[in-house]
Amino acid sequence: MLIQSHILSPSVSDFSHGSHKSRKSPCPVLRLASSRFIHSSWCKPSHVLKSDAVRGKRHCQWTYSNNVCSGTENENHNVAGMLPRRRKNFAVVFSASKGQNLGPNAEKKREVVEHIYLVKAKKELSDEEEKDMLDYLYTTQYQMGGIVAISVGRIADQNLENYTHAVFMRFHRKEDLARFYENPFYMKVLKEHVSPYCHESIYLDYESEVDDDILHIFRKGEEFNYGVEFVLLVSFVESAFGPPVEDAMASFGNLTLKFPSLIVQSTQGSNFSLCSKKYTHAVVTRLRSLEAFELFVGSSEYKDMWSSKFQPIVQKTLSIHFPVDPVGSELM
Image (cartoon, rainbow, N blue to C red; front, side, top):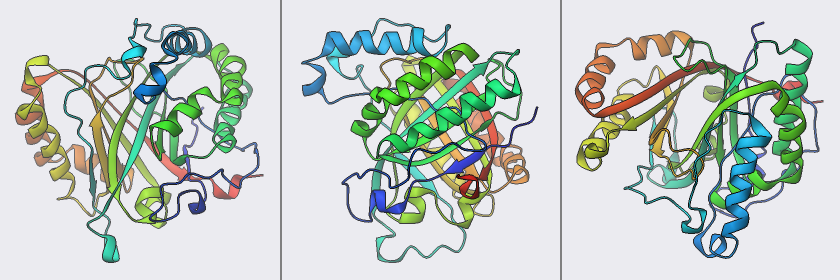
C-alpha cells in the first residue's frame, strides 16, 4: 500500500515574528484522514537534569526501549551530564528560495531545534492498524505548543537498514522538545498505538538556524506545500572532527545554494541526542519535486563533493527521501 506523505505547520501565531515566547496551538485535538509517525528525543538544561538525573535516565531508557519499539538503541547514557561531550555544533541553514523577498530581516537568523525519527513498521501491519497508529501520532502535536513544522511520510527508496517511515520536526527550542517527549498524551499514544506495530527505530536531534522570516521558519507558503524531503545521516570517523568535518558540512550547504531551482531549504547540525548516538550529524534538504531530487543527487557536483569531502572521513551513512504533500484540507 502506497501512503502519501504530508506536512502540517501550526498557526503562525504560535511563533510570532521576532518573539521567542511559545504559545499553545489554537487547534483542538484532531483526528486526521492521514497522519504520520512522530517521535522525539530530548535534552534538558543542565540545572534541571542535575536535579532529576536518575528519573531522567530511567525515563529515557524506558521510553525508547519498551514503549516505542524493541530493537531501539539501549545505551547507558549519562543523563546527569546533560549532553554528551559535544564537539563543535554545526547549526547551518541554506535557503535557496526562488524569487523570495525577505525584506530587512534577510540577514537575521532564528535558532531552532530539529528532530528526525525513522521507524521500521512490521510487515504484517494492516491498513486499519496503520491508519490508527498514524492518526493518533499526528494528533499529539496539538497537545502542546512549540512545534514549528512537521513533514512526515513513507520512505520512497530502499535503504540498507530497511526503515519504512520518516518524520522531520522543527521546534522552537530544546525545552519544547523536552515537553513534547514527556507529554502524557504522547506517552499513551506510544504505548497503545505505536509499540504494537513497529520493531525498530532511530532518532536524533540537532540545533540549526533558519532565516528569520515567517515562511522559512514555519516552512509555509507555496514552495513548502509540495516536494521531497531528503534526509542524510552521517557518522564521521573520530579523527576527522574539526576542520575536515566542518569543511565537509559547509561544502554540502554551499552546494545547495547553487541549485535554487531545485532546492527550497537545507539545514544541518550535529546530533545532541542522549539516547541515540549512532550518527553524529544530520542534513535535511527540501527539494521542489522528485525530479529535482534526482537531478541534485545525480549531478556531477554532488558526486564530486561526496567523493572528495565526505567519503574519505565517513564511517557510515544513511540516506533516505520521502514525498511531501499538504494536509490542511484534511483536518476534521
